[in-house]
Each structure stands twice: as structure tokens, then as C-alpha cells.
Length: 440
Image (tube, rainbow, N blue to C red; front, side, top):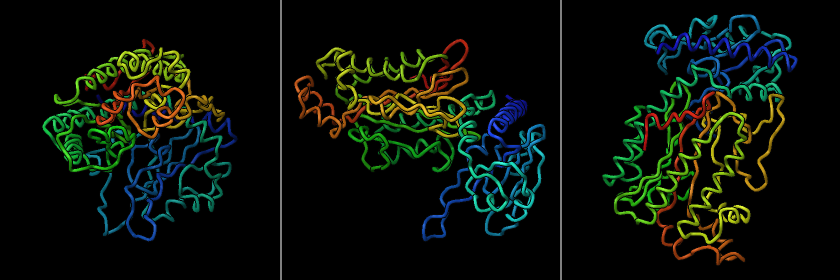
């Protein structure tokens, strides 16, 4: 599919939205910089560069120090920082993009060899907001720095994905699925956590820092650490939890799979099959008009039923949820908005005015409290883990007898389960982007 018409339509849509955002917040124009590189403390080494997300929402140009000037009724001005620098490779846009960039017609392009020249081109426009981290220069230009209300208005709008954004996320899903297939194969052949990570990266065909986020590869008990970052040289695991995704045009996929080796305990394999079934049920319930918190509550009820059926908890689903028995097994939210950022912005907004919609007290880690609408993309990622520190209060508390501690201890060596798909809300219901390319 040709990205050019999709992108130009996307840019027109975004410019119409930014015009409303500026009018609602008392500004005439908006300047967004792609950002400055971050240098590690007391060092001359930069961290891998990640552009300002709001810049990437309007322009796919890579690299630091570029600036966008957005004015209603005018073609966006793109000021490209293009220094003459013998330390790093400097190439034309045509070389970088393998031809004329598909997005270039959407902008008035100016190239500047120095930072001073970039900001001279920005000028000192009145009633103009600024978003980015080059705040010293923006302040010197008299711009309003990262205004909270305007930023919230833009954050709200980023939840509605254009056809261009959906296409980029589809392509990211294709790559992410390739990585997961390679990781699954490596695991079943006895690979270590580090080797599984390498298999994922090689299949995606990128550098580590170009992944959607740092991969989580947990064998056995490490699957119970939600953001496990290590990569042990220990292989032949009984279980693997692999959580990672890819990026295309800086839009992310976010996929998790838990895999059991044939040698794994049959009881854990049955638990895994149960989680697979309920995850697909939850994905099927995604629809416009549904408050995400209600879906999260349904996830707890379904997990409570699975815990009861598996003889792990001796209580009805309703009682388990009411008394918090499910919370140590599922301590995180059911999912989050997905887009340019993996945990995309605006998930806890009540509206474009920036009003905050807090999670309910019983589910404090819920990342998304919004009501789902068409063109939202969210992850659905129920989990069931054996985490000693979270189970300890129940083991020592008044309800200890309601838990099958012997079975819990026997299954704890397998860590936990998380299954995650990326789901688009459409007029006709949910579209599971992940299962189109990774059916298992």
C-alpha cells in the first residue's frame, strides 16, 4: 500500500485537530522540536535517541534538533537540522529514505547547518506554544514552554489512530510476529534467555535500541517478574515469557506470549490453556462505548473462575474479586493505549480539557481509564503470576485457608503467564491486529 496518500490524509487530519487545540487554549501557532540527545551524566556518550513523540505524530523525520512550526491554514514548516559534521554520517533525505520521502510533500522544507540557524528560522512568534526539551532556546524565543492544557488536548487526540498510523502498526505487528516466532522456536530448542533475545532481534532485523522496548525474556520463575530485564545464559527452560515488539515509522507493536515446553507440568499447561481462552474472550469484548475499567474488572472475574477451576483458590469468582484474592495473581492493568509510545499518552484523561480520570482504588495500576472509541488501539494482556511478595500477606492473613498453598508452591517454579494482543476498535467490533499474524 502506498503510504503517501495515507500520510497526507493523516497530516491534514492532524492539522485540523491542532487548529482546534490552539484555539481552545489561546495560541496562534505551535512549535515542536524533535528533541536534543540525552548525554549520560559525567560522560560524553549519548543514550539512543528517541524523537519527541508529538514531533513524530506529525513528521517521520529522524534525528535531533529539527523543528516543526504549525500554523492554522498554512503548510507546516519543517526546519531540518543538517550540519556539516565529519564525526557522523551526513546524508541527504533521498539517500536516507531510498528516494524522495513519501511524506515530504506535506511540508515546506528548510535545511539549516547550525542550531542557531534552526532557531533563527523559528523566530520569535507571538502567542506561540512550544513542545519539546530544547527549552532554553524556546524560552529565548519567547515561546510558552510545554503548556499543560494544550499538551493534554493533543494527548487526547492521539488516541484516535488514522489509517496511516494503523498501517504503520500493522507493519510493526508483522515484524513483531516474526520475532516471536523466532523466539518460540529458539526456546523449544533449548536456547538461553540471551539467545532467545538474539533470535528475536535478528528476525525483526534491527538494532536492540530500535525495538519497541527492551525485550523481556524470562525462563521459568523469572516469568513472575513483570519487567524482567536480565538475560541469563541458562537454557532448556520449562516455560518462557517473551514480551517485546517492533517499530515501523516509530509506531509500535507490543506482544507477549508464554510458551510451555513439552516437559512442563501438565497442571501449568492447563492453566496456560485457560489463560489463552480467557484472553481471546477479553479481546472479543473490546468495543466502542465500553469503559476500559469494566473490561479490566471482567478480566479479574475470569481469572478468579480459572483459579477456582484449577483448585488454586477456594472461593467463587465474585468473592475472590470482592476480597482481593485475584490481585496478587494479576497485579497490573489489563492493558494500555498503543501508538507512537508503547504506553501511549492520554489513557487517564476524561476529556481534551485535561481533566484527570483516576483509576479506582481497587485497581490502582490501571493505565487506561477511558471509554473505548472507534480508532483506539489498546493492548489486552491479562496475566497470572506466582509472586511470593504479593502472595505473602494472604499466606499469613485471615484468608490463608482459601488458597491451595501446596499447589501454588509447586507451580511457582514456572513463574507466570501473560498473553498480550494489540486490538483496534472498529465500527463493527474489535480487530485483533496481533492474531492476524501470530495466531497462537
